[in-house]
Image 1 (cartoon, rainbow, N blue to C red):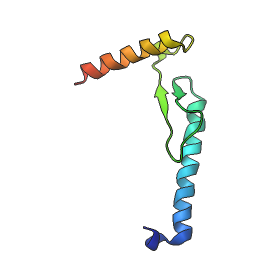
Image 2: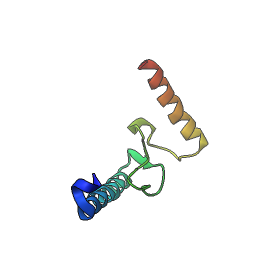
Image 3: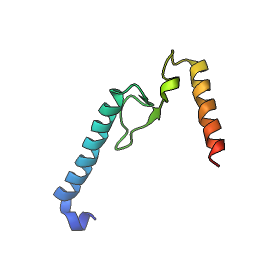
Image 4: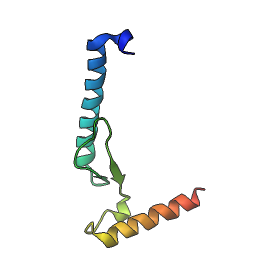
Length: 80
């Protein structure tokens, strides 16, 4: 790919991916139904949780995370 694009083309590709990750991180940060797993992106990876509206309320403590985990596990078992 580097040969086909050259250094400048490859640089533009990488910078575009970084910009997209930054943009996506900021979009997630501004929503109540998503929560970033890490404060920022790692390279081009953005780690986040989707929080269903019915679980979005309350303090995010150990009990809350257990409830979220139970809902996710239950849904995963139903979809097998």
